Image 1 (cartoon, rainbow, N blue to C red):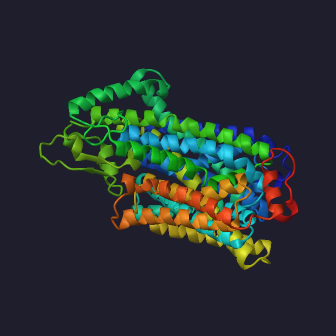
Image 2 (tube, rainbow, N blue to C red; image 1 turned 60 degrees about the horizontal axis):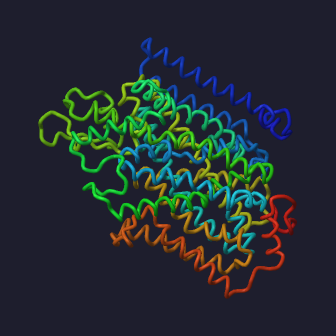
Length: 600
């Protein structure tokens, strides 16, 4: 009850002491890690270390979720609109840096080399679009959810319903990827089968979000960000110091790339790690060039269209704090993204130097450990010479970060720390996504469309039941191992970009955008993107212009804009009141026009 009783005062209580609370929390976590490190040196087993990190961190998240429980709608949906910019930026960083960023991005750079930078550029650059085009204005608009904005701006439930469909498609694809990542971590560090590990991890998701909605998720995500950024930076700083004597990996991984280039020559690798836009034969490829920039574009626009990220800017006290929180978000995300290329380079250098070419019989224990986790690492002595060749080792990109401490021979406590960080990343994003889906279904479908007279208690019960149902469905789908984490996340970005970006941006910046234009634009853009994704993924349809389906929005996005624009020109303009309202939300200061009609 401590948080519940003091958070509402907004002065002197919980909100007034956030620095002390989270500073003490960070110190306690570092102390806990140091104690485990000492105990490991005294003989504490790795299994106990893994259990300690898993259970303690989830228990802390559950405790925060319990303390933040609420029965108030504004607290459940938008955290009472009281989250300071710094902490909203931190929570957004955790919400954003999912299993894809923490677990798979460095793995993508490890396997793809230069082409993996497309993820870094796209995901980072998207926040520029968020800051410039959307976040402050959506905050001033003052709704609970993204479909809520569409329903009000386009004056009807048709746009709201289509918005929910797009939101559900993108967010569900995204949450399956997070659940898959949670299953990998839980399986490896608890030593249980993958299919059971998914549902065990699911409990961690639900305890954080079910009781307190956005309020619980916000304060849990701040705690999760602290753990994930410590967990991500410690191993790579350690390796940088160990290899080059400088604890700043961004200054040393250039040397690692030089060493990798030399090893690539010795190993006969024709596609260098750091070469730009080259094919498997090492030659410049226009196809690689086009796919690289298509991915960057789709990820940028997708970032600015993801409902669970945009929702975070509904929680700030005012427009100014929303702008500041975008800046803080970029800073906190930068800390991880700027380090990911170093992570990949150090991991590849370790594998090329100390694993490839070694006798298979004497390979380290991590090879055996990870080969037992869902086929994510396979080893086959194809020529039966007893020596590991490069092509005989297949490592899935989703285990590079998690396994690197073991690959580099660091103490096991670092592996446990990284697992805790990966779990924090996946849980924080899964919570945000679950909340986005459940809120859209309970607020936009149930309350706004089906039962406008529903009581507050009934609406919150419906939201919680839907949250549990969606979580169970996501876990069941993740158990089928539909694809790699980073691919599923890229699909989610494309779906969101094709279906939501045009109606959101045009709805704010072109007051002539009509309801009919927006609805047909959403349907056509989302439809084209979904058709291309499914047809190329499941029905072997040839690629259009050689563009891979992780960039499906490249075709849906322009269709959405063109259809919205053309139809808006030939259909009746929005009402005068709506056009005045749109003008007013673009003014940084002052009240919004017509606020009594459209605000919550």
